[in-house]
Amino acid sequence: MVVYFSWVLLERFNVLRKQVVQKELEKEIARNQLMTQQKEELEIQVEERTHKLQESLEALKSTQAQLIQSEKLASLGELTAGIAHEIQNPLNFVNNFSEVSTELLDEMRRD
Picture (tube, rainbow, N blue to C red):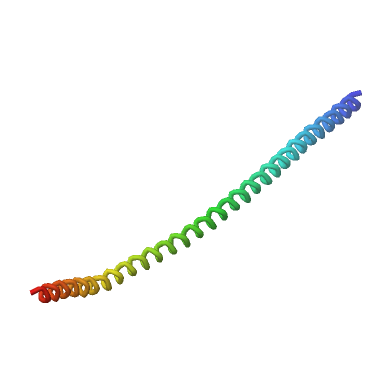
């Protein structure tokens, strides 16, 4: 009877041990599934952020190109204004001189 009782206890112990191992295995499987799901969500977030960063970089490059173009046009405008000023000064002198000469001629004719 003691042997039978020992055998029953041993069987019960084995059953309980298998149940504990099974529960631990189920917990580990659930943990792995959760980790896999979280990994997939993080990968999606990384892809979204990478896409947004690429869009921002493209917009920045476009803006930079526009800024460079604007600076070139501004420099060209300044150069053109400087050239026009330098051309205008001698022309003003000639125009003023011709007006004075015309006035002097008119005065000489009157006298």
